[in-house]
Image 1 (spheres, rainbow, N blue to C red):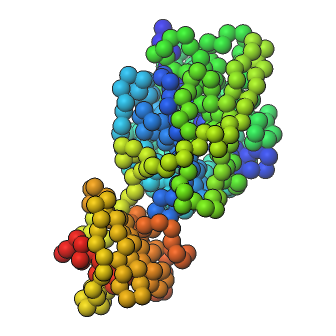
Image 2: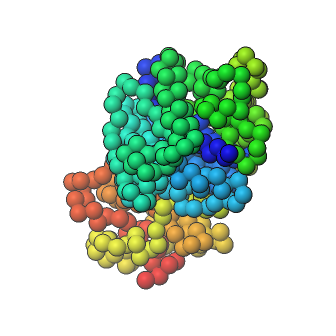
Image 3: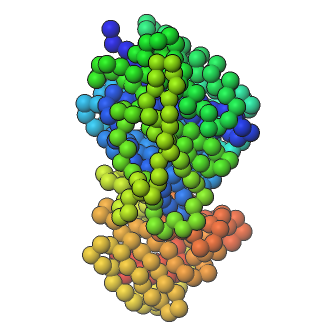
Length: 414
């Protein structure tokens, strides 16, 4: 008999804080690295599976995301082949949103399948998406515990719907709801689930935290808790089930709003007791900062020049004509151009996507910075608030200032 249980996700309020939780099940030794960086001006903190590219996390706006599969057969394949689909890129794009509505739209429009919980410090939205059946979005009732496993709630034919797999999915969901209602504090969520056992059999497929003697079967490798009001992630590592590759922090992140505690369980005794060690981030920190590989966690939703200038204010083009930018693009596609008293910083990646900024007031206050951050071509952090300039740019056409347009015209051409 093959048992094919997978993840548990939950949402609720503990210790007066709105929280997300996840048990992550894999059928391989999961190689996990934590990234803490700035993407398109937004601070994001997420863990990434370096085999498959899958990632989840929180951002500086207190928005967190967890997902449980409905197409669990794909989860089961991951131990045999590295599935590098586009879902991790979509998740990272979602983590750059400053509100739940925009995040939900990305999940639905870009078809991230399964059960997804998106939360801020007040509320949670549930998305159930199946490529065959469609997408259902629901705002979850406040002050309640909500749990999803691997069977469809709104789509009765999605996920596990028969036999032992259906029974396991239902049982694990019901047990999680019951146990989570008994918990008071954020720090007790993951350990309470980890220590919960039915009977003495550690390999019981109905356990919420799974283990197995069969290397091709699913077992729980890690747990994650997001304390959304405090923008804090708790990552729990289960011994011999996960390979922790370290914590990588962007050196430009001087005053982080997000934080993390990484806890390693030291095993579990027959009576359910166990010990925990909090890892020293200085010891596990990666000193040399590099962007994540495979264009997965490092992806930025930037644009080509033709996309950036589409609909651009014609006055900007006219005013850029007499300008003579001084500078050249280096071999790495990065440079700084001087135009009078102003400076334009620009970076062009290997796919010709453009990231840039300017020191001028028009860029900061007349809409350019807002559009650059929203559409993913902002280089670095915003200099201003990057809020929508409804009065100064009501038609949304100030996508570039005259300085940035002049630089693009020089190095990219028409």
